[in-house]
Image (cartoon, rainbow, N blue to C red):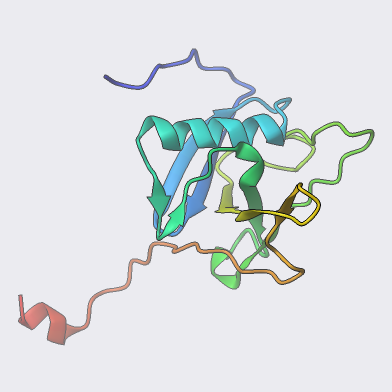
Length: 150
């Protein structure tokens, strides 16, 4: 069954969420929170029965998803940095407040939550950035040696 189609909205932005070689396109409203965006991304992955991406298990909770933005939007090959989500008064940052525009690429990764000593959940980042697993497509020609073997 094809995915449900929503009515086009001139204010909506289409964002490309990337992890390894997987890209998920979501149409978002500028006033939507990034928390809701994480939930929609998780629902999109689960609706396609994606259980893991490049060995990373898809979490059950959208709170275990983290977003990253390119260091240089003109050249995503330069790397990625965590998308700042500073919010005031415990309100979630919106798509517009995060500066996301139509056609932007955003990396995503999964936290590995573990049960802490105090009974709460601890995120397993330990101050070290594990990096962003994003493979950008390249359009370079294959070397002639590989072409001859075909």
